[in-house]
Length: 64
Image 1 (cartoon, rainbow, N blue to C red):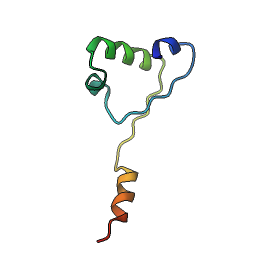
Image 2: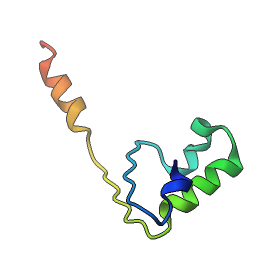
Image 3: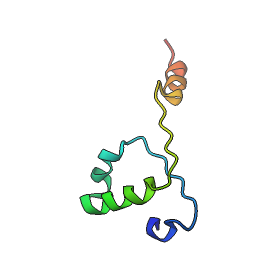
Image 4: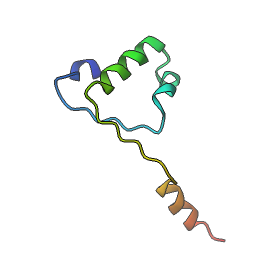
């Protein structure tokens, strides 16, 4: 799918994993490298840090 979209249309990918950890999901180092290479070429990468908003909400629902 990524190869078909490459330089033809926009793709949005969200992940809580760093690129270096993607091999654990896709299993093959060469395949993962090719995938990341195509995704980051011409990409706008947004990286967010800080406390998880969903975790904070879940913790507030727990009776104390």
